[in-house]
Amino acid sequence: MDDTTMVWIAILVVTVATLFTRLVGPEIMLRVKLTPARTRFLEALSTSVIAAILAGFLARGSLREAVALGIGALVMVTTRNAMAAMFVCIAAAATWSAVLG
Image (cartoon, helix red, strand yellow):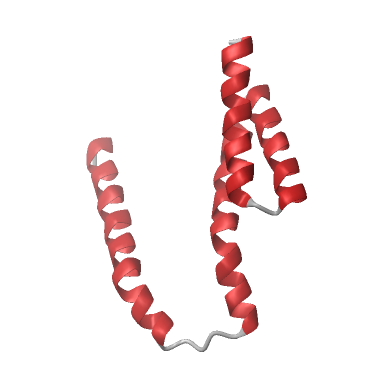
């Protein structure tokens, strides 16, 4: 099987999995009792996904990304606000690019 076919198969599999979770997920969650622990898990899930994505950028990135993520992490620790941390992180990377090229 050639590479193009494999890419299209991968896209199809991810599309079906995403569609399945979007359609079936809410139905399953209606039947799950939300305990305080499950609620905390669900509230932290989006931040965990963002952290995993950022870790991937950090692993492949340069000093600019490392500094921007470090600044964003400091904002996250001090403010406990993921949106503020993301904004500051993006602003730091953009400023680095504008000033240092």
